[in-house]
Image (tube, rainbow, N blue to C red; front, side, top):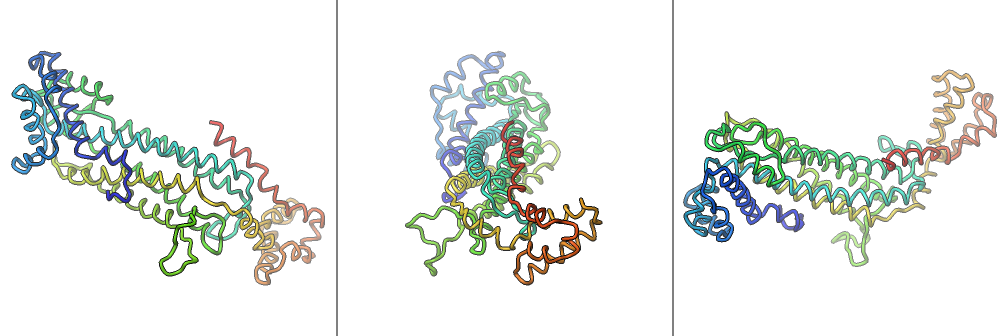
Length: 431
């Protein structure tokens, strides 16, 4: 990923230095097991640990000649540590190192993303409680529907990211496997006990059966979950973008006094952060299809997945880390315009109480289809003439023959729409 959308902690997971450090850790763990099993001489691990030093530039130079990254890595270790390092990788194949390392990097990345979601959840929870009873209009199809509260709106995102947190934990568990099974996965040249030892040492699980590569359905699941989380980021970003439109003006991204919104129009305060999040979400989702296509490899192994994973591993995780952090900052600092929410509630002059009138008529014995038409007639009149919905109802003899004036006025009560808000909040937050 480009620096603009990269954060240090996640980016460093995908640097060559970390990758080679993990390769060495895997090789040394395998060698430790082999020493214990008397497969290689004692002292190899101690010697390599004391002498080896990762030199990424040297590894790259060797790879330029041998055209093989793991051979280049092992050659550089031998150069630093001496002939005893030749015992490393005994009976192993490149995929044992590459796949176990890739899974470790995904696990490391996933744990950072989990922290990101946990921080975001705290911010959403705080804002949702703050605005639990901040009335605003709910919209369906972009059209005014019935009143809700901004806190309740935020609570839907809280619950969604709570689910995402659980999904990601499962995806990390799914990807946290280790394979040290040798060529074509038969353990012909490496003892299965070595794999078990390495897995325990690296806090991974043994891959039950590998074909020389760890099955890529695991990775497809992991990247698919990242795609789902990215979609949740976009849903939240889209909501804020819509609420910031001039015609709505209910919510705004934080805009500091030195910030500039447009090179041409000084009055502009654009929702650039949430627009950016929408774009980043698309990028993360674009990695899902290649991950799914990587599942189908030839026979016991090919490397058609390799070039894909070298790109989507860092791109998806680094981008999502940046997006989650940016979204958290937006949520913490956004401006909530309560007064504009009140104004928008009055735009339709009470039309959103139409369902209450409909239900009251049906409770008085009016057939639902007839009741619907009666209420709809008054609603359309109010829309077309920009007049009070309640006044139009009062002028309708058929309706007022069924509903008293006092009853009708009671139907136009905002508190009716907030009376179950605490029930919903308890359901979500008291887990």
